[in-house]
Image 1 (cartoon, rainbow, N blue to C red):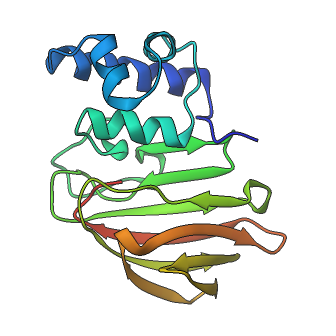
Image 2 (image 1 turned 90 degrees about the vertical axis):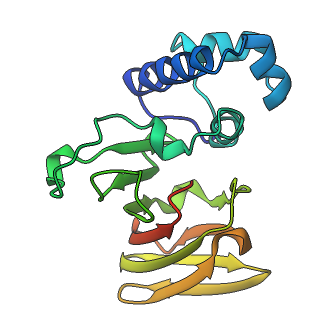
Length: 191
């Protein structure tokens, strides 16, 4: 199973963002392809909403555009300090098997808070390199996960928390039979 974005509408929004950002930066599709290692054809299809990117390819594009993946999610960033439940910005991957909802009103501050949900069917979510060092604290709301940090595995269940430096995170796996839900704070807000 590949780790792909959830809906055609979401893929089109992501693609439109990538195209606009690429143009602002003065990059051609070939320039972006050379930087990411992805084909210009794939990138063109992604920008048009035809290709469904993997989490790994999305990270490559975000890094090449010097933009955290969370910036590419849907919804406006606002000055209002309140984020209503039905108006959270979100990113869904693997047909909804991995979901992130942004709990902070903007991504331009020193920290971002998000809710993550992983289904056991997903298996291993391999963490990729982040563009800069981060610190993260994760608090389990429900379900269970196994988190690998610097080669050490930690199993967490509802109520448990873990603090780590983002560069040391190797993987997060939902274990058990139910969806794992957690709240995570990350600073700086790169993803």
